[in-house]
Image (cartoon, rainbow, N blue to C red; front, side, top):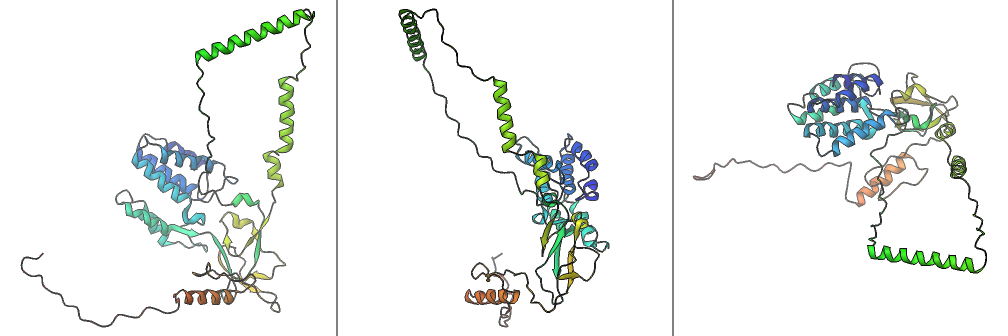
Length: 357
């Protein structure tokens, strides 16, 4: 468990090697801790970034679905599957803040989480150790302007890992047809009669000694070679697919930016909004507008009634909030007002009568 906390979100191969050995230990509680630690190590890792994460997820699925597995180990695998996708894959374990200060709530949360052995509700303290891996840019009015930053990596490198295994579609297997022995003997008799008739017809026509020319068929190896060449033309290899993937992409505001990904994210020099501080692109970032003469566009915020009255495209945040509040009033919901306090009353503690509990 200590190894998983120390290497959380790193995907360190040496730590994974140790934990995988412990995941096959004879003791059920050792396997439980190893599975939870593996989930911590591979948090927010995609297949393109760390191919090993696919095997780890399959290990969790196998442990959960194994009928002969111990209950304690299954409990660890279920926790591991939740930890590896914590916060909808938008958060990770962090014992320090973005500025480098110690987060005491995270330290206390993990310390209490490790005591779940004595009391299972301690598991919920794990949430105190999570920190959102987000990128939120705000202007001077604390509104979300429409902007983009550039990430100089492949999109698949830091893409969202899959939530679960893809659904397998089973092909319908046809039931075997029963063939009776009587039927097989009758078919064999008919085939022998047809061969005898063919020989008699050939001898009567005087071409008994001549044998018909066999159709020349291409060799099996030639067919395989042709088929292989056609498949190579139709489906490109993985290396070609990787080359075709762009080497950079744009990230909109707000979005998810991982700690490792932040090293490759830059602000475009020609962008309208520039950060006030240039020490990173994680968390909340205050930006300044370099084109004050142009109209600002803001990210539309969705509220409770967005589904009832969606804002028009191109509208600002204020317009979206007005539309949402009007829809809330129609639905009988008022977000600004609070419920009235109850009327004052006297509470009388009546003593139970004789014979009542």
